[in-house]
Length: 581
Image (cartoon, rainbow, N blue to C red; front, side):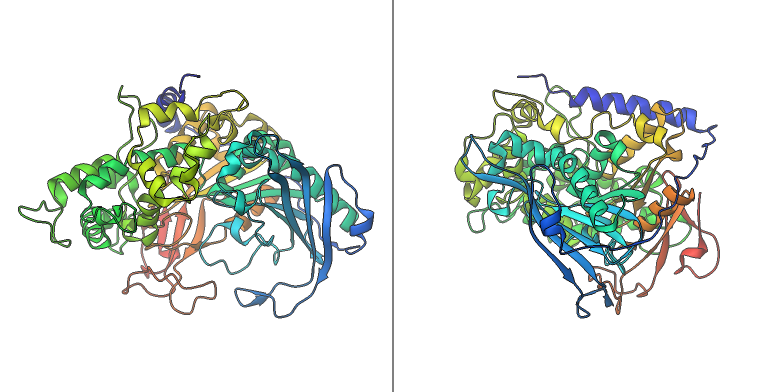
């Protein structure tokens, strides 16, 4: 078994962060020349592709021209497109006897903008989502998807079906396809389809995704730089395997203060910190941090200042008697919450993953989903760590279908004994999860910089599964490795109040894909991205977790990290009243 490497890597990132902060004070970012702008084209053929198109290890199952005026996205017609469904690399596994293939679909618009988009899907994959770019773009309640914007789009299941989740992790090749190889195999095939359909290759190629899809985009920025020009990573699980293990490492702690120990044979972890008590914490955060950006509006823009201003032990009342669920937390609760937000450590003191910033978005329902329910059920953290990320995989096969067994695995989870399995290789598992899941050389993107490519990352400050601190550490280390010039090709935007990819008390509706295209093809580097709340009447869907006193159309700028949105003058409900500095 190989030595677990992450603590050393994390310490290296922190050291680089310090160096970058010192050097960055006098750094002037040098802009790079834009790549040539994509040119529009028209679909030359569609249905003939079923007989005319040939590509190694590829079978087209169906090809059809779709023109349905009733097919809408955010109330607007999608338009005519060619729909292609197929499979690549069909095989029978010698390990588990299962039939595997990389399933995919492509949607090629009649009115093509000359651009290609690989849509990275979320979760554990296994489903071919509609190839319209909606999932990939990552914003809450999009008003227009990539297909409507003229992109030719591909979506895939990353090499396994939903029925094979999570036990596809028993098959080494299925692990590698899920981690990164499906993207590498599909990309040249998709470009060949585009050439056959439009008579030429795409002028510009993009890859975008949210959550695990955001991880795909980050991995592609390292592994497939030559294939893409722009990379959009929303809420990326850059260390997905470590964040899942981190949540498991807190299960015993939450169970310690849970008031309801079992519900349907599962630990009811949410009773450890129900919504009413999370609201108490959120109010305390706002009391100390809301006004730091110049206006009291229910948002904390200045994350760094809030880190200094808010203290859980001091600013949240401690119960002198029994918990009442509204006015105080017990001393033990505070201890557990502090540990859950702090950087987790192995017993030798080495850091395992990043800390999480305190943000009023803790009230959102998704926070409880990821911290509690996903840590004991058989669909998320226990089975992902046990079967997909550990080498060798867990022998507790019943855990894949039995919630009780999954909860037992979570409650017994020991980070000291389990964490090394994430970086181990064993027998037929020749690549560790640290290798096949995370981008190699994530903080040294020399090839991306050299070709003029661009990477844009958007991340919710209140994301409960992938830490905002982790992605900030990544960017600061990237900047250090590129002599303070990372912003010339990579930019990070935080969304205050937003949970995992959307939701929460946040302005979570924004168009990062258009910002990326403008940057890649016109050289317009984004310093801010316009974002709106999704109140009553929003065409993209209403965010039901918005505070009742927020205007339906509130807007804010998302500022490029490390700048902060600060109120300047004018209507405090409008983004134009804020500056990024």
